[in-house]
Image 1 (spheres, rainbow, N blue to C red):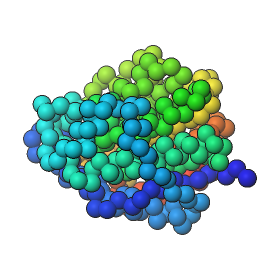
Image 2: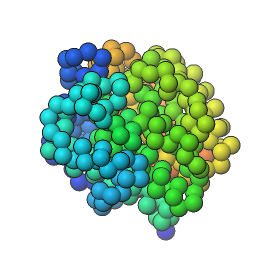
Image 3: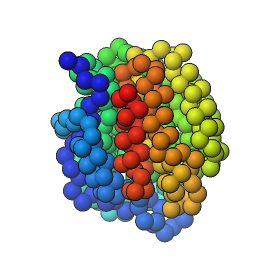
Image 4: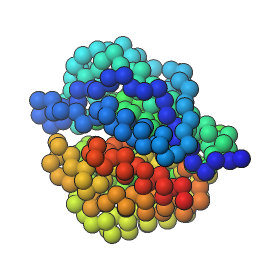
Length: 315
């Protein structure tokens, strides 16, 4: 019997709490990417959905979207790294790498690849992968925004390489700049990003559509109704593309409760119930869907928002 939704979990993170990039300026700010994010989502998933545990992928599988030199850098480098040493997004001045960074990032990639495999094997119609650290700011040879390997791009390429058309929808607050860079001009892949137009990675480049990459920037602090209109039009574009599989970078930092400490602004006017509607709208495409966790930082609302999204997907 084919499942309707399976939740992919990996090995628990063990104290991986990276110090963040310094973004515009020289003083590191307190990183929002904390181990507690995974813990709260994991507990919710185990209590409410069918779960399955991922294997650990081979390091060589990362080569589908990252260079060997970059992989080696993440694996072997320790301590503070500055932009002039290479491998950082232009938005980030510094990054901190420790002993846990590579292993945890490899496990997150493993979860996404395993979620893709579940769809390809027709084990489930939908899968959700708890990926931490997130990945959509990681480019082919660049880390950024506490993203090291691009989980969504890895899953999309794995699926595309089985002769399937893939649409990748990024609904995190922030532009999926790394995914954009990796997937631009790739055949049989359509990438779409709905994001706030004046936030990290602070580059107008990612507000412009090019070839197979469609940018949908929205003004900050917009209303739920405007956001839903934009999502509806974006889903119409996906339906017209007629993909075999949809990959969703799901970030709940679009919640009105999820105020980013660095940007000191709210995102979109989305309530918890709106994430159920988002999941329902995506499910209405009637496509196999892999959802990959990206942002979302208010621990009071994070698991509730993810749960509502998954219940919408699982309707």
